[in-house]
Image (cartoon, rainbow, N blue to C red; front, side, top):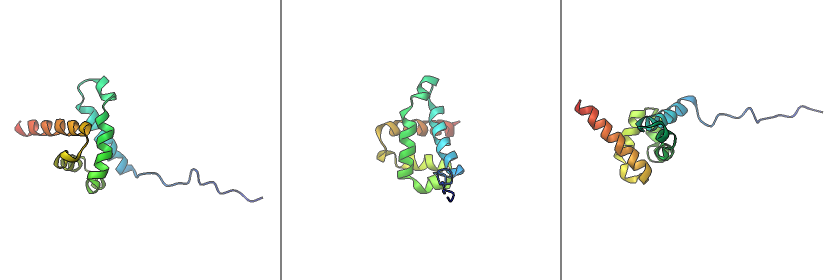
Length: 101
């Protein structure tokens, strides 16, 4: 009997490490915006914005630059869901406050 070729563990990863780090970075950024740890764990904007960033800003997601993804999402804020829209408004306000300093 010949050996069976098991491809279960030989599959390519879903995404490369750099893409995963950008997605995790965007998620961490959204969690960091939360004011309490309890809110950070339950922040629905994190998942909503990552999915929408993939759809609305694919080139920026491929660039692996969190700032470019944020800028793109802010530029397309009217196309986002209400949950992600609120998160992007918080990011935009934080950027404007940081620019005034």
